[in-house]
Length: 152
Image 1 (cartoon, one colour):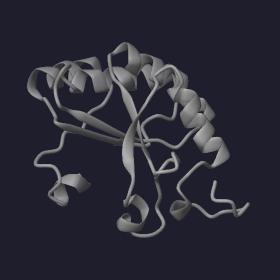
Image 2 (cartoon, rainbow, N blue to C red):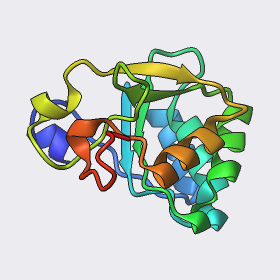
Image 3 (cartoon, rainbow, N blue to C red):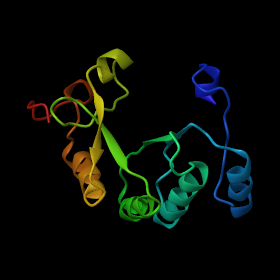
Image 4 (cartoon, rainbow, N blue to C red):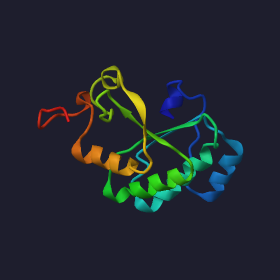
C-alpha cells in the first residue's frame, strides 16, 4: 500500500495462502513486482510462501520479487530456499563493493544504498550465506553499530 501511495506501484494486490485465493490471482493477476517483508517467520509456512510467490510470478516473465528478511531459527529458511529453487527462482543479494549485505533503517536511503548492487547467490549455499551474514553481522558499515570497530 505504501508503494502505491508513493506512486511506485500503479496497483497493489494483497494475498494470503488460501488455495482459492491463489487460484483466482493466478488467473487474473500478473504482477511485475512483488514486495514482501516479515513474511518468513514460521517453518510451517515457508513452503506456502514459496508456492504463493510461484503462483504470483509467471515463469519466464520479467517480474521480480523483493523479500526483506530478518533471520529467525524458527522461520524455515532452508525449506523456503529449497522450495523457491524447486519452483525455478534464483536469488540475489544486495551487497556493497566488499560483499557485505546492504540493509538498514539508520541514515538516509542515499547513505545506505549508494554503490550497492544485486549479486547472484548460489541456490546450494543461499540459506547458509544468509544465516552467516545475520549471525556474524556482515553488513555494510553505514548500516550497523560496530561493537568490534572493524566494520564487519
